[in-house]
Length: 322
Image (cartoon, rainbow, N blue to C red; front, top):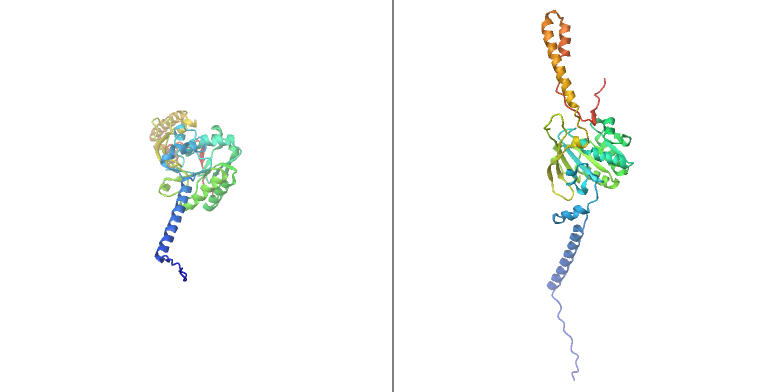
């Protein structure tokens, strides 16, 4: 029997091995954390993948029907967004943007008690024409801010309040920033307001948080007596790729093409023939007229400027009075 107790000798782990094990554990934790973040991102409702495009389109909330079937086929929810910011890029005001929105304005004014808010419009909305296409003008709220900041504040408050079904706004493009469109998009979501910004085509190169962006191009009509077709390019939409050249008969759909314009052309030709006859009479009697009479005759029979057909829904703002 051994009278001396033997000591159990254990080998201490190497410091390098400890550091390597710790590094492996930290790396594993980081990978697990990244995987969790990636999984949460992929499950986010606002993230779409091309492979799930068809499935997401079926899950979209119904939108506001635009009144144009060929356009609704390309819009998320088969219509204008019920709560969100959309932008219309225009070559100039009056190319058909209001006629494009007439069916939606008509539906909202008749089905909801909320306001249709117009902020800083470049023209005066023509109430009789709006009523003739079925829009309840008693629900139209006009706001004319003095400055860009006031207009931006009014639009954000109108969207966020929840008291407006649709808000239309014309803002100062030079002062509009990306963060402004982000705030408007959030406000439109909070207040369940369909919000429309009308911007010039120079804004195409600028980023925006709007969920729907459209470019409108007026088409030259085959029949000059029946104008009113617009080509729409969908530049940005939620859950889909851009789509170009969607031709919409805005005048025919909204019943704002006027065949009586042929009568206007006829009377214009009669007037021009009458003035030509008057010119001939002036030449014969010119020697007997005084200087003032000649000036009066020349001014009264001057050839008029080319007639441009205005939009039936708007009329120009009055000029300044002195």
